[in-house]
Length: 247
Image 1 (cartoon, rainbow, N blue to C red):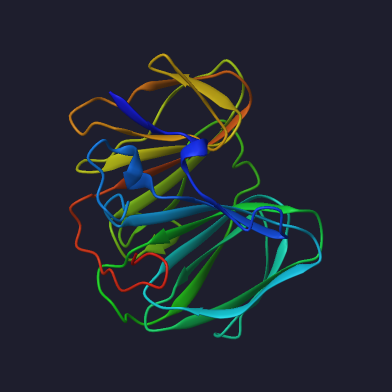
Image 2 (spheres, rainbow, N blue to C red):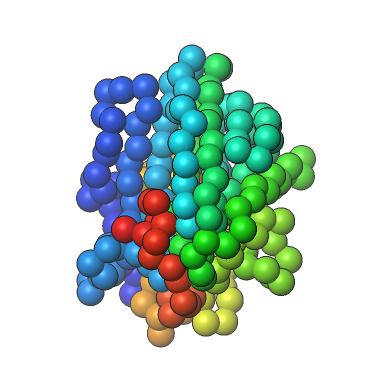
């Protein structure tokens, strides 16, 4: 059985302003959710928009693993390592904040739409760093794409905990089975479009988890879609000292 977290059940911050965030706590999909709403080490997924000609000024994170995943817009990224990069749906970034890492983002073009994904690391105060991933030209080809995972998983971006992330850009009328990994539980998020799952109609901003003993359901696409899937070891050791991920 799926347990659904609808978009209208998640709070929006900055409504009407240039930087707007709808904060998703994936664990809240569970009927017996944890008080803090984390889904194992997957703590927070922020669905964000940033209007053109705006900057999120330099600020520090500690003990957050932060993946920036874009579906529209481009930003200029500056951080405390000295890295200056242009980020977009074709170039993703994962910041391993560890003992302390600062960054600034400026959007000078169209409105940006993105997810910022906050994962709890296995330990606090690990060495900080930043990773970038230039996606292959054919990534929107209707197959699941492996974006991030733990060390040794073969993922292009590395979380320092037991979390994997996939996405797919699929056409209307497809039947999709979500990725699986032994010992990992899925959280599925509809980034764009609409799907039907187990008789439920889900649209942009909705997400769901699957009971641990159940086989992953079939998703039937009712429109062109972008779907993001996280596979999580809900029992993994995780630090709760992160700036965002820790609460």
